[in-house]
Image (cartoon, rainbow, N blue to C red; front, side, top):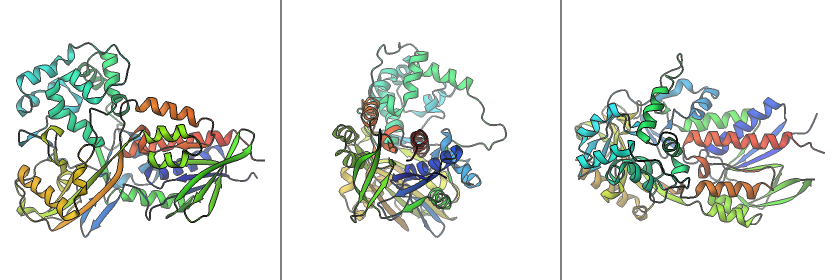
Length: 483
């Protein structure tokens, strides 16, 4: 019987844990004995997936949901036996709003899909002037770009739909996902579908119409999912169950284990052994190494091996953000909250990026008689507010809620969560840099990078990228034989 092959994964967020799960799954399918270890420097698992439960209040410190249209998240939940815990957004009150002219306007239904039969709600919203609406409609006449070069989100959407539609609606919808600046964000790296629609159909509106007509209705026997889904008792259940499953499979999971350096040495012809130097001076050796750490952490670890890779990783910037959860007696905010929440365009000059009426959007998030609200601040160009202490930060957010929504009551629960350098920014040229990075690391078989810093920031993106990282590891190990 051959000895187990060794894999160490550095980083215990969803990317690292999902990679470990995929390594175990794929190795079992090939009959390949594996000894997998996951190292996490923090005192808890899950990275930014953190759920706080206080009585009947359930608040998320980081992401509160994931896209159901990207199946990696749903598939992992199914494998972990969590499907019956998945919840949709509430059926009633699905409206969302955007700040314009000092007040909140309802976002037109089906805005992101640009289906003409739904544009009537755009006309009634008051978000765009008649000239702005006309300019947006010119998308069907404007020819596709003859260039294949990368383009910023701002440049692309201004070119297709005009400045007014971009600044008032599209910028907060698109750039808000990344807490980024649309002037710097790469279209191909963040929303490649829009680039593909323009190239194929010459118009985003025509392309969305065509793809909507062809879209399959979904599995006939499966449950209907809303665009975003969560778990009944919070997303941290995904981490808890995933980590428990890994340990059942024999994966070693070590908390408080910081890697200070990575060294390489010859192992076999064309093979490396990776030595990890830990903070306490101990060392670990492995045939295969996955870095599921932020790009700037991976940069520091890899720079002694390959300065080029370190430089490329350092070119992926990160933004800092914070979420502020507040609970109010429902009677004191009646009429002030409606729908699921609102987004704030950058041109409004506000501190708030967005606010979610959590207890209206999701079932089981607050007890009867309570309204749970979550506010978002920070992001590229708006990080100064994070220098305030918690008291000042909460006071600033409450002042904005008062001005925008009329909420003047005192919250009976407040929780501030700060995320320093937590949101990777896919700036112009991001995909080209990833291609260079892959080429640079190709001379180190068994070394793989994964995580939100590369090919998607959402939970399903991280799960999918972890599976791809695992496939590289298993393919590499399957092609070699221990001495």
